[in-house]
Image 1 (cartoon, rainbow, N blue to C red):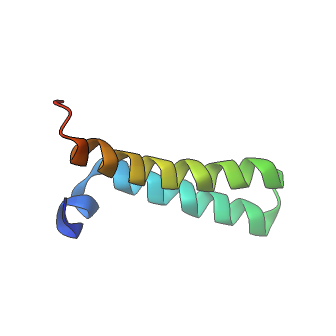
Image 2 (image 1 turned 135 degrees about the vertical axis):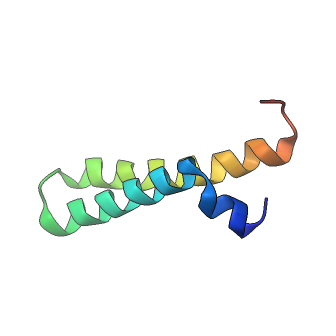
Length: 60
């Protein structure tokens, strides 16, 4: 998967939104630190796990 295909996927943008929400939570302190970190980790997992599944060749 190249970068153009990656940024066109909904999963990528959901991951980016989760990362941004986690960073926002760290700076505002509204959710506690653990929840903010889990949002960031979940966002990265969504992005990279999607890439891994597509590279593995598993049929959709």
